[in-house]
Every structure is written in structure tokens, then in C-alpha cells.
Figure 1: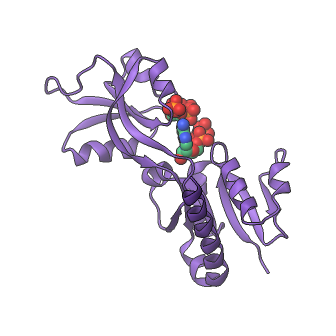
Figure 2 (figure 1 turned 180 degrees about the vertical axis):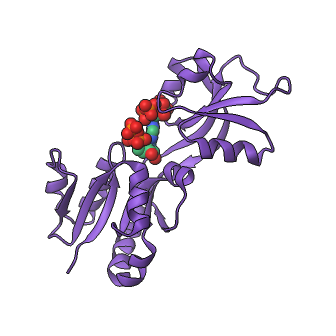
Figure 3 (figure 1 turned 90 degrees about the horizontal axis):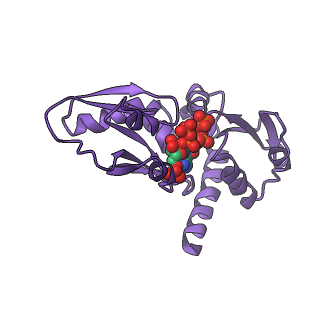
Length: 215
Ligand SMILES: Nc1ncnc2c1ncn2[C@@H]1O[C@H](COP(=O)(O)OP(=O)(O)OP(=O)(O)O)[C@@H](O)[C@H]1O
Ligand SMILES: O=P(O)(O)OC[C@H]1O[C@H](OP(=O)(O)OP(=O)(O)O)[C@H](O)[C@@H]1O
């Protein structure tokens, strides 16, 4: 039987996903001792794990080369795509927020605001919903620099502990939405491998419920 191929977001979500798979009873030694390997079997080979950058997880699942994926809601909101989003995994929790310098009043005057973000679509959509016309500048990382350096009036970015904002003299001005890791499934895989995938989703949902009760 062909393994179910699951794309995992490398980095922050990786360890939590491996822990989840271990709680479900899969031996993840290969994923723990992976070195530079990017694709590896886990359990008794019934699952194959693919380690990819967040946006690529969506690409691989949407195309069908991976059956399932674990990716942040932030990436899903930014990139969009056609797939099933079947579970909120309850980890990788953070939020999108609008932030800027503490003393700055974003709404003084009628100037078009410049917003810096790694998530340009999320930023555009947020201000569009508020019927505000803004210029969005794409920044690749350390987005907090943009208002400090005077490139932008504010940022739309992920906030987790708030430390990065605080240490750079910025504050949250508006909450956009909560973010957490999601389980996504390819549309065709959901039909063709329904039983296996539904069983796995079921196990994951039970684990999420159990952990929510314990918390
Ligand atoms: N403090 C946080 N900052 C950024 N992402 C977070 C944070 N907490 C949880 N996440 C989640 O973790 C996911 C992966 O983030 P990570 O920083 O590991 O990779 P990335 O966003 O692709 O950045 P990089 O460019 O460093 O690879 C994010 O898409 C988001 O869903
Ligand atoms: O609220 P905090 O706990 O401080 O976390 C938020 C920070 O973490 C993320 O950056 P990341 O570390 O992914 O680096 P990047 O800026 O290079 O994307 C995010 O873009 C914020 O800068």
C-alpha cells in the first residue's frame, strides 16, 4: 500500500507536528534524526513525511503530490488555494495584528497609509474590509523595522509573545485574527483514500479534544 504523504511545515510547526504523530502511536525516529533529509517514512512506513517551507506545503497538497499537510492559517490566508481544511490542530498559536510606534495615531489626517508586511494579501484584505485604501509594501522578514525606519506607517504581522514588538518600541493597534496550525487535505486524495484519511483525521481530532480537556 502506498504511504499517505504528509507535508509538514519546517521550522516552528515541525516539532509540534512530530509530537502529535508520536502521540498517535507513529514511530518518528526518522523525523527526529533526519539530518538534512527532507522526505522520510515514519511509523511502519504507512506515512511518509515531507518537510517543506510553509507556502510550498500548500502547493504540494493542492497539486496532489502530497495527500495532506500541516500549515499555519497565516499561510492559508495569504496564499489561498483549493483543498480541504479539516482541523485546527491547536498549536502554532499566534495572531495577526496591526502594529506601529506607540505614539503614532494611524487615523490622523486623510493620507493613504503605507503598510509593510510579509503577508501582503492579508494586509490588503484587512484594510479593504475597513474600506480603506492603503499602499502595501512587501517585506521579507524583521517587518518591525519598517515603521521604525520610517518606510511604513504600520505593519501587519504575526504576534506571538509580543516581545519583538516591545523590544522595538511598537505596540498592537488592532487585532486582525487568531492564527494556528491547520490540517489540510488534497481534494482527490480525500475521495480516493477516504477511509485511511478519515481514520487519521479521526485520531487527530480525538487527540486535540483530549489535550483541550487536559489544558
Ligand atoms: N512567533 C511566530 N512567528 C511566526 N510564525 C509563527 C509564530 N508562532 C507560530 N507561528 C506559525 O509558524 C509557522 C512557521 O513559521 P516559521 O517562522 O517557522 O517559518 P516561516 O514563517 O516560513 O519563516 P522563515 O522565513 O523563518 O522560514 C508560521 O507560518 C505560523 O503559522
Ligand atoms: O511576538 P513574538 O513572540 O516576538 O513573535 C513575533 C515575531 O516572530 C516572527 O518573526 P520570525 O521570528 O519568524 O522572523 P522574521 O521576522 O524573519 O520572519 C514575526 O514576524 C514577528 O517578528
